[in-house]
Image (tube, rainbow, N blue to C red; front, top):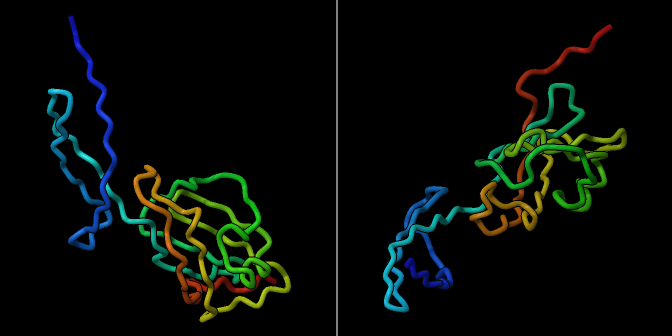
Length: 152
């Protein structure tokens, strides 16, 4: 006869001792006459690595240091991800993959290289949901890696 014991664990706060983005911590849990060794993964919230203008200057591409829970899919308004002024300059935000957010700029956009944009972090967590939400991140928009010449 198999006896099952339900053990409830409240994860303690954890402050990592290194700057790694992922931390595995082992806990020895005891209760109800049962002992178990359990591993928990704590992950740092995603952070913006770069914000770069597209080759045509029509979009800003934000790259994160890890995959986010946002994934990829249909575009939406940028108000969930960008500060009010920047969101107003963008017509659409799309997660092109779990670690890349693309903000398509509108015709009246004032965003250019060296513009500062605040990426709002409250909806951005790690893909495996083991991080808390990101903080707001101020990033400077970098010029395109390769300029696309106009076509005639």
